[in-house]
Image (cartoon, rainbow, N blue to C red; front, side, top):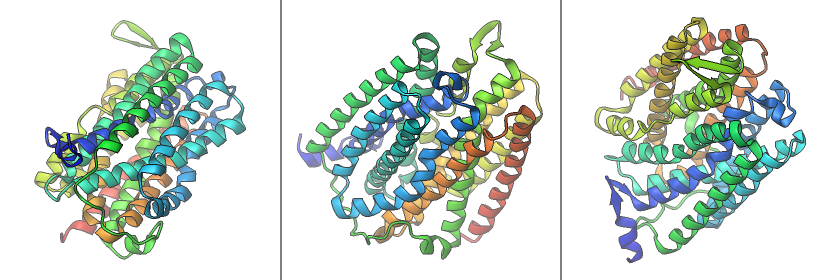
Length: 404
């Protein structure tokens, strides 16, 4: 198959380069996602306190406030493929280090290294999707990319949590590193054989471009929306769910006559946030517009958080968690697509790195806030406050786009 023919191959309207890069990026999330399910529920496995866990789960996101801009400049000067391969290799090393050390300083360095990796992998993935996409299918391609990438998150939280309960975290993370290495080699081979037909628009070498965001009310609302989404869902809820469940039920959660370890239960629930809904939601946003889906996502997410803050019923907890995760998926896909819609072609690297920095700021603050209070009552109060924040975000977004 020729290079151009390989690039034109599609599966259900999704081009092969998008599928390939999504699989490569998704595999790197195995170890990172596992930590969010296991560390808050079993901090003693690493001899850590809950506040220390919050610091580690936020460190990779905080460092990306710097590395997003650095990677945008590196891509402009060195191209995408070399840095992308380097990030794949480093992600394997980082994942191994999670399993074979309990020294806080080493884990902190590893988490910061993962932040650099994710800045590189995410921008490379976004760039591939937007290069392949048109105005008619940007939501579909972004949703499909997100669905494939999040298979790694599902594997990390579901398989990682279950295996940890059986064989321990060290062997589990070693197995994940082996899978990541195999996937990286596969992408490296594919990327030598297939190249996209479309050539990137020449880019300016700026990193983060706050002026472009502040000068466009729609970009500002989009970046603010993803910051709040990251703060509430990727940060607060994801990092604190294990603590929330263990505070309610202890070390075992009984449901329909079946008792599950709290780590396994946390993994199952976190895995539910990455059900393959994003292609459908992305396609709907292509057909009916981004604003209705984004406004609905903020509203549904707020309702779910209010329920978590007040309920004692396990059934209502499950419904609220699922509603919140569906809202998170809708918001992530449509906000990513909106950023792609609004980014000027000649400044796409700069705008996307700025957008990613807003997301990372919110995602980094979430675990720090959610795990800094070692009581269930304080966490429930935070959930209620987060619901108010989501309602405010919906209003801000509607005001920014009401004339569009």
